[in-house]
Image 1 (cartoon, rainbow, N blue to C red):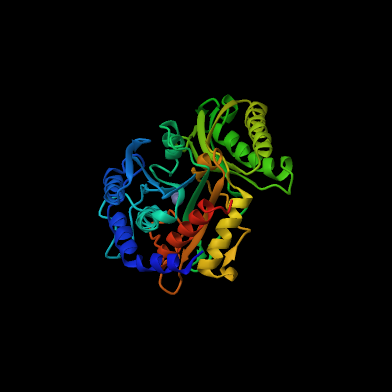
Image 2: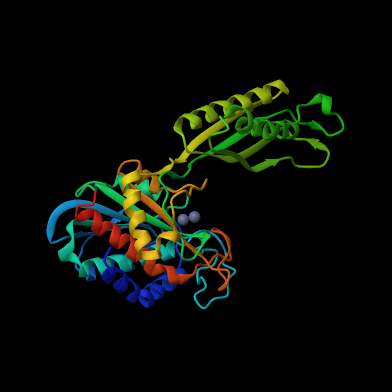
Length: 394
Ligand SMILES: [Zn+2]
Ligand SMILES: [Zn+2]
């Protein structure tokens, strides 16, 4: 990676912070990123790019053809915020009640805009095409799939896809570029337990849906402990359990929802099967019944080894080799996986926590904030990796 690129990315720092704070002040929920995508589209058009809007409802795509022929590299940035009331007291605090950029997608959007600006200046060095993809609705609504359905992976079809996430699980100055599975596959389940209501003092006349649910929750924890190879990584979590209406009534129904996280598709199938058996079998054994509905949210995010290597080398040039690790993965999920399931590529993490300055809260916390000094690093790494790939390192 050439030093000019890094220097130029660092010169964008103030601009990147201005953009990021503007998006932070005006967060928008998934598929409602009208203001955000409007700013992005105008910026890309002002840079002279061919711009498409309305891809996946509020998604924006900008295509930058280089001076020489070559493959297409896709660069993906998510734009959506979360339904959280911000508790920070910064001058750029959210002006939109109940909505907050608590995952850092404001930073991703700013990095994408800065990268576009930098790459236009280097158009002559681009042997191929850069496709800037600004995605809506990453948070659980699968905006990636919406964009794919609207043809984002065609005309021109990318050969490789790159993306990043600012990451408060790591300190500022660190980049994590994993190989293979870096984020888990996520499924959501809903269990409906059917018992039989009766007086709280006459339990023998009914079937207690609460007691039954308690057994199901406990039994579900045996799935990971006793049905999954201990060398594999997986999670089964019950996140909600609702039942009952009064102190002296045996509840007739209960409902719970939760999530299953896995990396290996075979392990995932085993768990789905066991969870179903445990839920239905436990309910039946205790005299009631239960149904379970399981829906896939997104597959695992899997990095291509060669592309990850290229990104890791570029990150080492930008951040110093000692500050770049290869062994990171998390049970969180990301719909970048939908792109990486179809196009090889790399999704990496840029440490953004800074205990000295303040931002230490986890993602999705009402006090989440990042150390903005990392924004130019994101631009520099993506710029360097994309140019290296286009210029033959593939
Ligand atoms: Zn998030
Ligand atoms: Zn996120």
